[in-house]
Amino acid sequence: MNIGIVCYPTLGGSGVVATELGKALARKGNQVHFIAYSKPFRLDMEQDNIHFHKVDISNYDLFEYPPYGLSLTNTIVEIALSQDLDVLHVHYAIPHASAAYLARQILIAKNKTLPYITTLHGTDITLIGKDPSLNEVITFAMNQSDILTTVSQSLKNDTLKHFKIKNEIHVVPNFVCAEEYQQDRDMKLRRKYVKDDEKVLLHISNFRPVKKVEDVVRVFALVKKSIKCKLVLVGDGPDAKLIDHLCMELGVCNDTVRVGKLKDVRTILSIADLFLLTSETESFGLVALEAMASGIPVISTNTGGIPEVNIHEKTGYLSDVGDVADMAKNAIVLLEDEQTMSVFQANALNIAREFDIQNVLPLYESLYKRLI
Image (tube, rainbow, N blue to C red):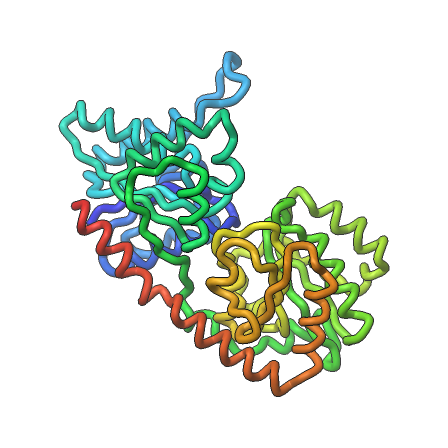
């Protein structure tokens, strides 16, 4: 198959999933064409059957905001014709679904058929999509999609609640290549950050307000009163300065390590004892799944699709959004009890294997083949 994939190239879950999906499809002999405004963060151009097409954005003085959606539409049309795409898969509805619809209409006039699948990932529905200035357009584009998927049952429910969707919605969960995360603990790296008698609490995100990284710091500050530990923060974003100030306010700067953005998080995951995810909303919680695939229990909020991944009192613990005291209590329970920790670690690995790409990839392949 010749498959076009439209995604955001950033660290967010939608871009990661789209990239890993495309790489897996390419390994099976498909020609995969990524379309984005820059090369996706995790894309390996040395892999066979992978192609990247940059969207060039016109920036005239007339436009206060460059018309990315139109530039994307034009690029989709060009690639569909030059590469004879069989199907287009757009990740994140805004503006990818509307660009896909417009591209398909243009291609019809050129006697080219291009069916498209829209995968909804979360904030395109739960936050941005509910904006009145976008609602009608995105609802139309979703209903015009040949197939519509969400990454969790929770997101499907939210989509049906907030939008007038006529099409069937297929739930195809996010995934990991589980065996790639089962690495031996990198003791040299661990000792770079902590002493042998200290625990590592880890958080990875894009530091947006919805991730509530300040609650990660607050949980850590409470845990630190009972457990020798350090907090390792991976990522960067608009709340970075807020986190720095909060660390100073709580007196935990010397025990907090900021390592910035990492293209590959598997090694840093290998050194962690617990993963903290305090988000206000998550459609799935891909980073929690990555932690579990590394055998790390997860302390998280109970919002959105997270409970479909992190199973309460089995792979970790769930708490209400903002309840940092409960999250800290749960973290201490695990860190103080080696036997319980060992059981939770094994459970995390077993659940993560259920989301292995080998189980999820055939679901997408069957959708592509249905359209073609």
